[in-house]
Figure 1 (tube, rainbow, N blue to C red):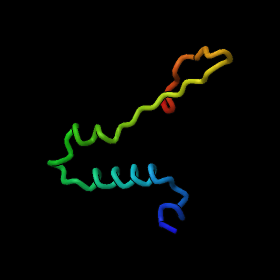
Figure 2: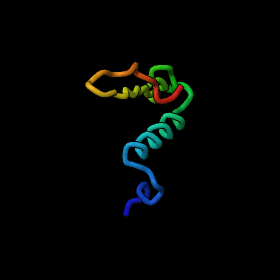
Figure 3: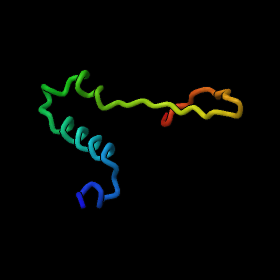
Amino acid sequence: MSAWRKAGLTYNSYLAVAARTVRAALKKELQNTAVLNRSVTEAKVIDYASKGSAAEAVPLKK
């Protein structure tokens, strides 16, 4: 069994942690806003009510 699975992570969360670690380890001159903005992820959830009507999208984290 792989180490990330033993730690209780999904593969996507393992990759997110690895990417964050690599970005944090970059030299200061390479840590520009374009590189650091790649780690920002936005997701929204829509709850569907009966008969196909949908509620307003709500961000997962604020």
